[in-house]
Length: 545
Image 1 (cartoon, rainbow, N blue to C red):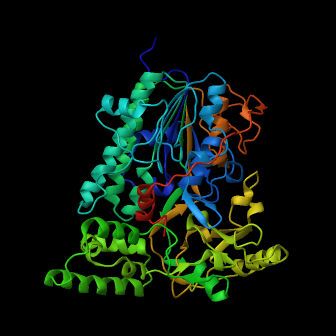
Image 2: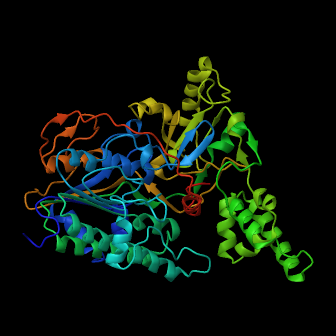
Image 3: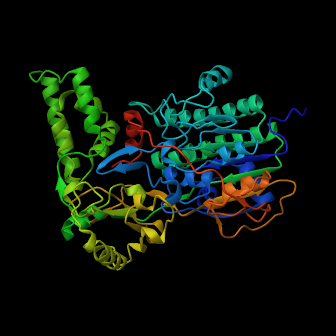
């Protein structure tokens, strides 16, 4: 037997947010392996979907279907006005490794987002983003084995703690990247699979934490390139795919807040009661376990006075409670405030949508959409069925014509969900999809005094990532029109397996499809996540506002 860990088959490297914009900013020679994969075979832009965000886009990649078929539209799923962070049980379509298993092919999957808890298939899987820190893996007990074998494995950066320096945090990202590669190669040797899928998330996370720090970005991308190189050196795949779920790039300084706009229009009602995980919840727990401090102590009184001034100033500029926590941490006040400031003081810094009392609202900015509080569908629906379509059409017309303060359109498109999605889960999508102009306008679900303001972030997701396919028999093509949905059909076709007739994509023109077949219907129900640590991580990155 060859010493190669994977022989004569297919390997996929997923690099979150990889795109031409990112590569053009890296120093020459920073990513030689990525550059070679792009240059030697077929490559081109890979169009993402709506929304072009991790929790929905990676399931689209590994199922080959649009969100209307797999059912995940953002980080959150909703049941009435209640919500939970999504997990793999919310992805209601077969993953490509499950389809391969049905045809006798073995797979190894490491760090792919929204794969916890894993289902049954022939092979091994360590979940990725939005899984808990100690996730269930497939097979049972795999994580302990991997940790023992490679000297430790973590899902998240242990350096993301109060007091960690910038270098320590970037060191933590480099460590995670190294763990991904070592774990993947260990499992390739353990399983000898036909298919391998290794994903890197830090390539996106570094931009959310250090958007203008070129050296931090370079360190993370060099580390990823090193792990791809080491894996290719240890394997002998016939076909290697490099894919990203979306692009990322600098954005303009305009932020649009649909909920503030809809409040002024009379559709949104607000409340001071938080409806999402917030730093105030964390502060309450710290108050409970640490004590509130001695109000007679001069030091505590001074800290309280300073904290009140800080909170008051933050509230005046409209920061949410999550952002208040991050800002306090940045100036070293988070623990002091958590010990001595009542949670209602922290909480008062935010105004929130009262979803049950509103007619239309943005529930989750990552969805890029508006939800209508429809009678008979939502528990306390305010819009009668007879008025639903007229309201939706009026919003389409009004928002499509909306201009930002600079006179430019806010949106490239405003679409009814049926124009974007199809499948059994379209009813779970937002009623309207908002496509920001060139993805250059930042959308925020926060409620502030004005509908427009300065953007909270300087970088955000873009619609096009990268696809590259390399191998001895892969012609050097300029891939045009490649889409996220094409990745799974390409993998199946390269492994000689028919494509599911439910898939929305087609095999890229480097391999030939072997026809279509009807796999068994997906069976299974959603399980709750209920993981405060997962929610806090999403809040800290600005995903939960």
